[in-house]
Image 1 (cartoon, rainbow, N blue to C red):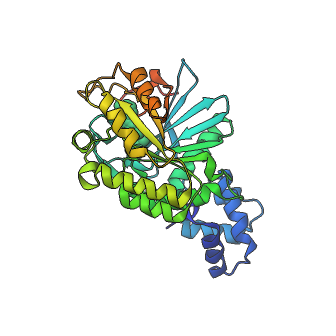
Image 2: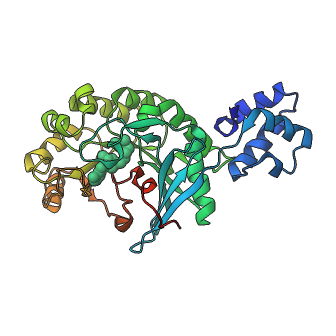
Image 3: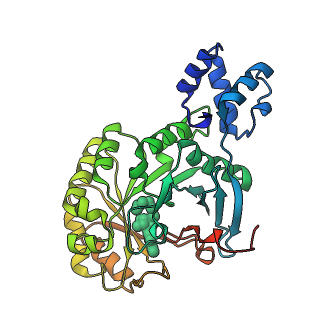
Length: 344
Ligand code: SAH
């Protein structure tokens, strides 16, 4: 069976041509799918015969809401979606004054092993398909009844570890006949998979690349992020500088402040030295306490920010949303499946 929603419009047109259909059918069916129809029978301007043919060959992905939580603090919503094969993934909807941002997952689980992150504890189960990433945006929008203007690929998973599907998803969500969300409204976050950064640079997309830095020296970084043992921080910054040269896009460096580990002034100085020569932006994240992790939040966030700014580096402190529903950075995991009750 074919996952029809993962097809680009061109692929869909070719596929329909093979079924003996005129070219405009591709656009027609693509449009239906990107509006969120869950059955071919809902495609009212498509003949019954064709609907039948499609039904025999393809399926339409449509996750079901396994659980939905709304933060009492700020209205942030966390969805636990159940996929066709029973796996579950999380999506977070954040409401800001400038519009709604959805934080989507790119894999079921994660194999990157960052020591402070809850999403990686159980390892990776599988990659998400383009349609499953699109569905998180589409069905969150439909369920919440609110338009989504921004997407961050910052949920569970490492986008660069599933880059083919992520790129396909970007093409889909960006399409004028689909959700039509502009690249400038999309951020992609990576723990620092250098070949992925290099590949993305070649495409010169206008999205925002976020790099989860968390330490500017290899000793500390290797300790908290195993990916640094494969691509160390020097290689990472070389790739970032080349990325900026190619795309002209400012990179955002994510930095979760961990008490006594990465919050020393000398580390702020080293960040500044490494960023020198490109317009980097550092986003300081107050570490979210993950029960299983030995790390504690730093008390030096403001001092660290000042130190960076003294070197001319823009540094902001990320506001934490959804703290009462475990929806903040690094807290997403599949524990909700094990819990009973509380279903919205
Ligand atoms: N794999 C990608 C996408 C995950 S994004 C990446 O690593 O960038 C999630 C962001 O939250 C990353 O910057 C991650 O490092 C950060 N994060 C993980 N655990 C955290 C925690 N306990 N507190 C604060 N931020 C955390």
